[in-house]
Amino acid sequence: MTKTSDSIKRFVTQYIAPLLLLFAGVAIVASFGKRKVVSDDSLSIDDTPVVHVQTVGPYDSAVIIEADGLVVPFREIQLATQVSGIVLEKSSNCRAGNEVQKGQELFKIDPTDYEIELRKCETQLDQSKIELDELSLDIDNTVKLLELAQADSDLQKKEVDRLEEIATKVVIPQSDIDRAKRTFLTAEQNRQQLDNQQRSLAQRRYRLSNSVKLAEIQVERAKLDLQRTTINSTVSGRIVREVVEQDSFAQKGSTLVVIQDHSRAEVRCKIRISDLEWITGERVEVDQSGGSLGNLNVDVIYRTENSREECLWLGRLERFDGEGVESDTHMLPVRVVIDEPQRSDAAPGPKRIVRGMYVTVRITGKKQDNLVTVPASALRLNTRTSHRLWRVDGAVPTKNSDGQMLSGELQKITGFRLIRPVINSETGIRDSWIVDPAESDLRPGDTITISNPQGYPKGLQGGMMVDYVTQSQLLESTNNSATDQGGANE
Image (cartoon, rainbow, N blue to C red; front, side, top):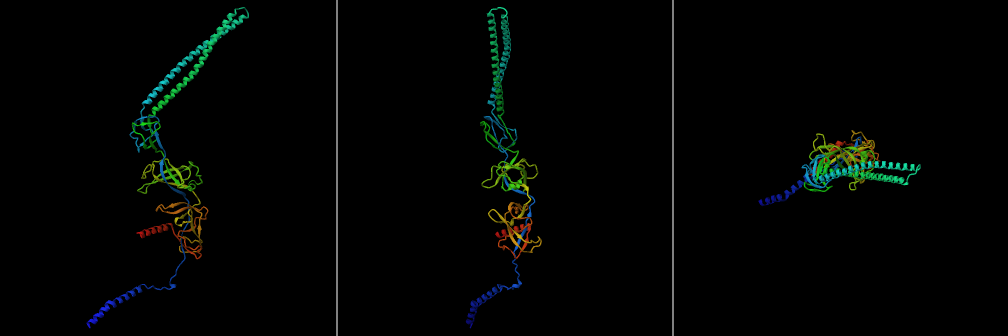
C-alpha cells in the first residue's frame, strides 16, 4: 500500500504538476495579451493634413556681405645698395622682426674709394676753371688788339684815298700810291687774323665752359656716391628679411634687407560676381581689371582664438585684385585697404593688424527695395542650381487662430534668387535667407510652408490645418531635435 501511494505521488510530482504549471502560465499570458475591442463610434480619426507655415517678411536693411580674407602687406621694400663695397657697419637694430623708422641708418659701406673719387673730380673741376679763366684773358687781349688793328686799317685806307685824290690834281709817283695800298692791305690782313683768332677763342671758350659743367656734374655724382655709402631706411616698418652681414662685400644693386611698410595694410578676399550688384547698387563689368570699386567703407574683423572678442578696423573696398574670375573657385578677388592699421580703442586683442591674419570682411551694400526674407527651413532644392518654395494658396487665417480649416492648394514658387543667409546673432545659426523675388511672384506677406510637403495631395481640396510657427519656436524645435538625436546616439 505504501509503495502504491509513493508511486502515485511520484507520478503527480513528475508529470501532473508541470502540466498544471504550464497551463496556468498560458492562461496568464493570454489574459494580459487580450486586446479590448473598441467600437468605431468611440474613436474619431482626423486625417486632415497639418501644414506648418511662416509668413514672408520684407527686408528693409542693406545687404550685408561677409567674406573671409587674408591680411597682406601694403608694400614690401627691398632696400638695395646703390654703390658697391665692403659693409663696414651694420646697425644692431637691423635684424628680422625689429621695427625701424624712416631715415634710420642701417648700413655703412667703405667710403675710401668714393672719397678719393670726389677729390679727383674736384681737382679736375678746379683745373677746368683755371683754363677757362686763362682763355677769358686771351679773349680780352685779342679784342683789344683787334680794335688797334681796325684803327690802323682805317688809317691806311684814308692814306690811300688821300693819295688818289691828289693824283687827280697834280702828278705824283705811282710807286707812292702802290706803297700806300700795300701798307693798307697789310693792316687789313692783320685785322682779319685777329678777328679769326677771336672767333676761335669764342668756340674754345664754349668748349671749356662745357668741360667745367661736366666736371661739376662729376663732382655732384662723386658726392652722391659718397652719401650713398650710408644706407638709411626709406620707410617706417618691420624688417622681414636680412640678406647681408657686416664685412660682406655688397655689389651695386644687391638687396640688403626687406622692410614691410606699416603705414597701411591690405586684405585680399573673394566675393561672388553676383555680390557686385548689391555692393555698388549697379552692374559693374568684371573686365574692369584694376578699376576702382568706389572706395566703399567696410569693416575688417579679427576674432581671437580663445575668446569671442572682435577686433575691428575700418577699411575701403578699393579695387579688383588681378584680372577676371578665378577658374578654380569662380570667385572674384578684390582688395581692401586699411589706412589706419593701428587701433586706438581700448578693446582687448591685438592693436595692430599684421600680415597673415585671417579676418572677416563685412561689406554693407546699397539698400534695395524689393528684397524679402524667408525661413531657411522653407527652401527646397529644385534643381542643382535653384530652389523652390511652397506657398499656401487660399484665405489664410489670422496668426493666432491655430487649428482653423483652410481650403486651397500648395503652389510651387520658383525663379527667385538667394542673396545671403541671415545669421542669428544669439545662436550663430543661418535661420533665414535674403531673397530677391526676381521673376517669381513672391511678395511680403505670403504664407509659405516650413514642413516637408512631400506626399501632400496636389490640390488638398479637403482642406488643411494651418499651424503658424514663430522663428523662436522653430529654433527651439530644432535645438530639441538635435538634443534628442544626441541622446539617441549616446
